[in-house]
Amino acid sequence: MSLQEFLNANPVDGITDDVPVSYRFVDKDKKPLLFTIKAMTDVEFNDLRKACTAIKKGRKVEFVHSDSTCRRLFGTR
Image (cartoon, rainbow, N blue to C red):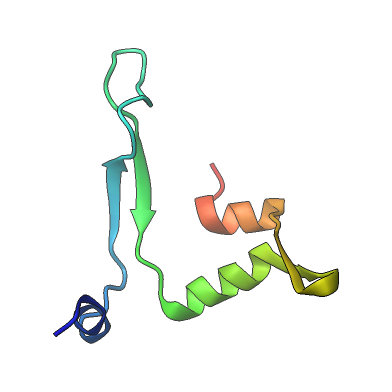
């Protein structure tokens, strides 16, 4: 069984975790800052991808973002 077959057979939904992304991101006490990550469904991923890309002249793909897209990604804090 390939890795892709394994991942397809074992979908992960609804998992959220706080992880250190890099030890360069630290607070005033030198503790690593934690970033919240979550698993996305195929539908969520495709919706977000469509919202963040624009097809320009000559089939050139441009990555764009807006405040509403950032709020969907990162929440409103």
